[in-house]
Image (cartoon, rainbow, N blue to C red):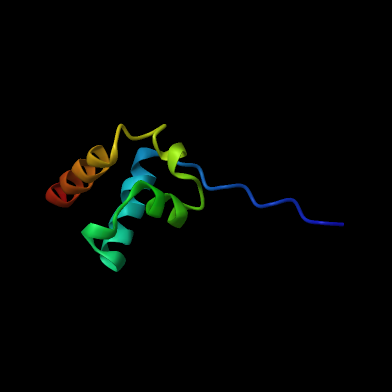
Length: 69
């Protein structure tokens, strides 16, 4: 019998921004793309657009998080 695939983590704007911060620590600002981040999250790029308007929206959210912290 095969195992059912484990469920994908629930995406949210906060989870995406947190993942982006981790990604930026490892890869740097120039490497941040929606597809690269989606790969890190175990999903496809277009699914992130359910929570983000654009790559610039993501970058703006990351900058705001850094400023707020």
